[in-house]
Length: 129
Image (cartoon, rainbow, N blue to C red; front, side, top):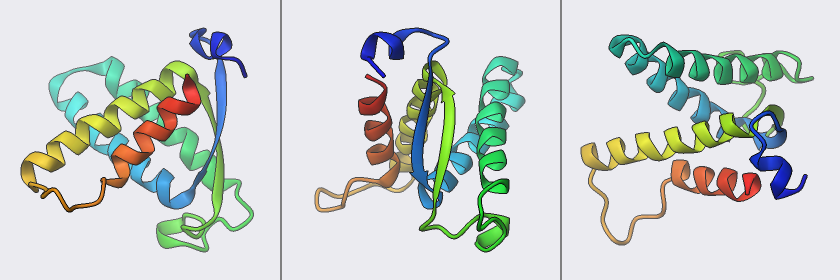
């Protein structure tokens, strides 16, 4: 898909992600939805909920569904997730947001590896652009 198509709000992008990465996205969206609900931000809560439901549906239809933790496929398996480009941008932004929160709670030293959430956000942003 061209970057022009990726910038169109209705453009849908399919990403292949490991279940391990998707469970990080799911947990991130869980945090986002919980805070948005508390703050009365229905739009953000709805968008986060759509992301989670899309992942759950992909996991349910995976040939190895229920063979991993809490009903997920095994962490090393891949999921094919299709969302609008704008939603992928939202996901990347939330991964960055919650990484900032984590860094405040758990200060990092110079020698620490880059957190997986930041790596994942950058990878999504590269694929979207």
